[in-house]
Structure formats: C-alpha cells, structure tokens
Length: 332
Image 1 (tube, rainbow, N blue to C red):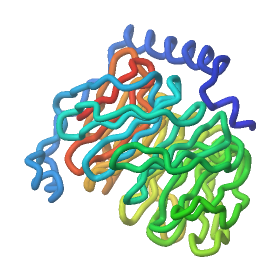
Image 2 (image 1 turned 90 degrees about the vertical axis):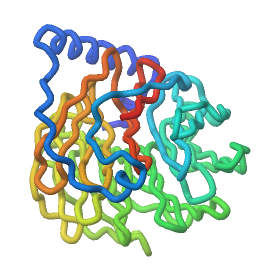
Image 3 (image 1 turned 180 degrees about the vertical axis):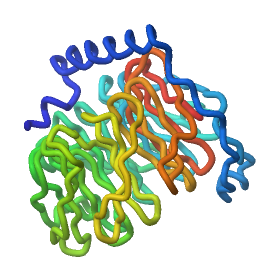
Image 4 (image 1 turned 90 degrees about the horizontal axis):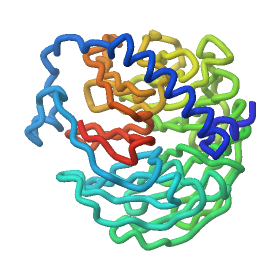
C-alpha cells in the first residue's frame, strides 16, 4: 500500500472528509458513547505535583494553524505541526498562549523534541526541519525518505519513517543519516522504549522492533489483520500501545518480546496515542478514549465535535489533542 493514500492531500482530504462526515452523522444520530463513571484516579506524581490529580472533566481549546496533526511537548510548551499552513505553532502549555508560529517545509505532520530542538517532518518535501526550541529559529533542513511522518528521539538520534518501507536513523547534532533500515509496508510512526525502536507499518498491519544501536530487526508483530492499519504508537514503561485505525482498536504488546497482552475496542478510527503516567489516551474520529494502562479498561470517552482527533501529547499534567478540522489544540 502506498502511504500517499493516507497522507493528507487534496484528494485524500476529500475522501477523509467524507468518511469523517459519515461517521459524525452516524454518531450524532445514535448519540456519542456515554463516558463510564470516573473511577478513582491512580495517583500520578506528575499530576499531583501540578495540582491535577483528578480525571479530565472539561476541555479548553486554542487556535493554531490550519490542519494540525502531530503534537510534541518541550518541557514547557506544546508544538503543533500545521499541515495545511506549512507552519508549526508554539503554545505555552500553562495557558495556551501562542508564543510563535514558524514556517517549515511543505505538509508538516510530525514534531519531535530532542531536548533542545524541535524536529518537524515535512511529508510533501521528503525532509525534516530542525528548529531551535527557544525561539523557533530554523537550524537546518535535511532530506530523508519519501513521506516522513511521526518520528521518535532515542537520546542521540532521530528515527524517521519514510512512508514506503524503511526508517532512517539521523544524528540530531548535525542531521547526518547514519543508516536506513528496512521495515514493513508504509511505515508511519515510531516509538522508543529505552533500548529499541518500534515502527508501525500502516500498509501491512504489522509493527517492527529494531535494536536502536544498530538497526537490527528483532521482530515483526501482526496486529491481526492486514487492514488493521496501525498508526499511532506509545510506550508506557513496560508495554507498547498501537492504535489500529482500520479496526477501531488499540493493541498492547509486551515490549520485551512483542507478545500481545490485549486488544481493546476504542472509538472509530484510532489515530494518535499517548501515555500520561497512568493511563493511555487514543485520539480518533471524532472520539478520544482514556484507557487504564494496567488492563485496558475504558475510563472515559470524550467527543470533540466537528473534528478529527489526530495527534496526542502529555505535558506532565494535561493531555493535548490536535483537532485537524477545527484548527485547534485541545487541552484536557
């Protein structure tokens, strides 16, 4: 499968809009799923320290650029990749104030923080742009792959899926490519577990595990069906969570050996995934699900009207969701 069929473009946006409109209409007619009564939240020290020990019960939203997809947190601010505007927006996480909007390449979809800089994947250019996080100054733009999407940082290197069949390892100090490694069909997102890199292969329903030190493939794991379309991916400290867009599920894999520990139904068409220290959050179209990481139980289902919920990020106290159709970032 060619990832260009998934990457938002003029034709794909039309098709996606039809799908989302159809789903939204069905859910409007039937009513959005009723959130389960909140269970007592486990004490997450990060949340308690920031006086946010309670579960999400309301949402704030902030305008960003056109069609935000990816999100990243830099320790103080949230960055959004605005696909439709060829920009990234920097928001102060505490209050959502826009601190800057910066031009990047064509079709930005992903943002990743390396401790000092933000890296932006430009899906139409086959490049990644490096911005200084302090002021948004462009430090460099580097060619990589065909359709780069959601990346991961391993402490020294950036791992970039090429959208075709490989992932590239780049040194963040200078953007030099240190290796390109074959994975599955249409790799789209990457996560790092402390030792290994995990890649979702959207086109063949699998996830590939590579050793970060040298790119050796340690395993390829099926999500159950070819059209599972695994997309977003996150690590919870012990396990890997994958949003299967084609099945409306999220799969939990044990990071040590890739064993499937569970597959859980979530909102239609899962997209991004994030871990908040206690629970897993899955964005979708148009629902956002909060699952208990220990057993996959759905704790809450949130409906963000009139938008696709794409990228998900955690800032230490709050969850942020990219609303691609409303041009907003939502804070829970």
